[in-house]
Image 1 (cartoon, rainbow, N blue to C red):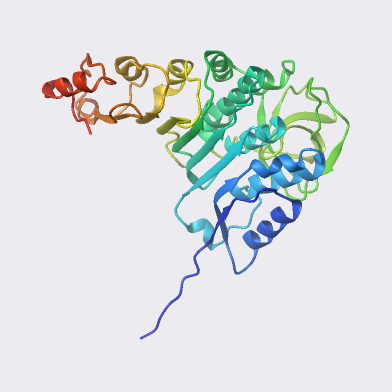
Image 2 (tube, rainbow, N blue to C red):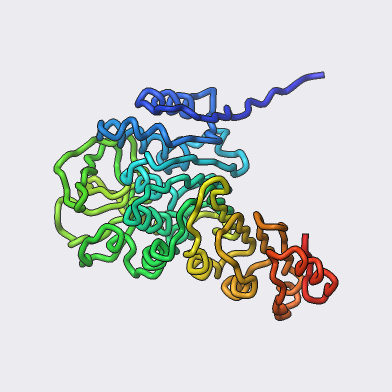
Length: 380
């Protein structure tokens, strides 16, 4: 009898209070080594706040972590890359800087090899302006047409949400509706050249430092790896430096001579795109959820499964279903009862979904409604 041992990836759960440059270097060494593969399963980004004063180190740490998490076409494919798509959980709080959050979202919109993304958004800064800005970047990184065509996510779970206001959703929806979302996000003028993707070559110079007013601070870093899926925007066509969204770094400027243009358009993901979404509000702290109807209306068209938990506003089941024409499963949790409506039978047989007249938060009304099984395909 002969035994065969298969070396599985090392699973890392990182809860460090502080993230230092050395941490990213260690993970990079493990992940790219000849004999070991590293898969980060849970990563707390709270510790990045300690690096906020040391700009360039902070930027390199964030860029390196995002590259490890979400991949890059410059990496050598190892046996680990043959593993089934996996899930990653990110945890953050209000100490995460705006620049770090933009860098995170710039990686999400072209992430590879991750099927399920769990994001703990315990990020109520108390400033509406900051909240609006974060939701704009979430729209770009997770729900824009570019993100849904490029990233490998098909299941996104946003948890511990403390703020999803109507004002937040105005900005969120504006990004999704924008014909040129990068220019809208960064407040730059319309370019003479259409947005396009490119590969940034190894050791390219990157201008990354913009002040609070969006003005460039002339400071460059040398990126020690190449980067695919760089999106160019507000491009006049002839300048030495070009505006770009660089995965893991966010808004930057790069030299035109350091770009290799991607003829196939950036390499769309081999997945059906986002089809399952969970929205879970913070159950321990007061949360704002009056923007939830706008959110569902904006993203519902492509969803097949939707879970909403601990919302602080009354939800209309019929309006949700109307906003989600492909929806097969709707779950509402956190009230007096948790319920799941199975619509797959109606969808499979191309039948209209009946109108639901029950007031679900009332246990008595809900119990009476269970007797009329013709109105519900399945409640669990």
